[in-house]
Length: 263
Image 1 (cartoon, one colour):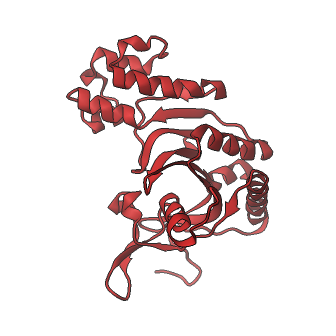
Image 2 (spheres, rainbow, N blue to C red):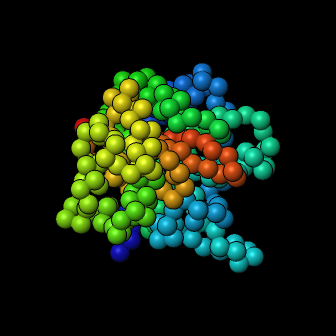
């Protein structure tokens, strides 16, 4: 039996102290963005192009009045860039948003996010860190490169699932070395070596390097990162390309961050 006061699994309800903390987190993030020259945008809940970002099984899909397939917004990045370039035709390069995304079957995910057209990931990461610092929070930073697993599959007999599940018994010796300290890059093929050198630049942020990690977002094209708290992703960001423009962005997962105040 479903009662009138029941809410679906994955749906969110905020009240009292938690609602107040959530509002304060969003206020602090807004202040950081505005101080760093970001413009705010709120995009539609519905989108025609979410399959560019996520797998079909992750989307809540239906049809519009003309029988065209659309989805509840599962990711904000591509929609933000396209709306800015094609609809707003704005010259502003830096945009932020505070809004939920939705994943099948009925999950709401509240996000604080930013996109920087033609921006460098290192600069986007600094904004991400500034927000966490204002919240007096610090988490391990893990940096990866989406091209490394793809190149390994091209250069060896490994499948992406072998890398994702770390089937070490299938790995050539040089692939196993990617789980090490990465100091001796000469042991890697040239294409891999170039990607490893790129992620090593993030050691100045005290980053943990994870070159074999496989991302679940389709649009990443290069380096991407995650801030982790035990098994939770607090924030993640990466490089991508939309409409031929190389850009960078990140999202902070508000609900995972709110767990810090639970209890």
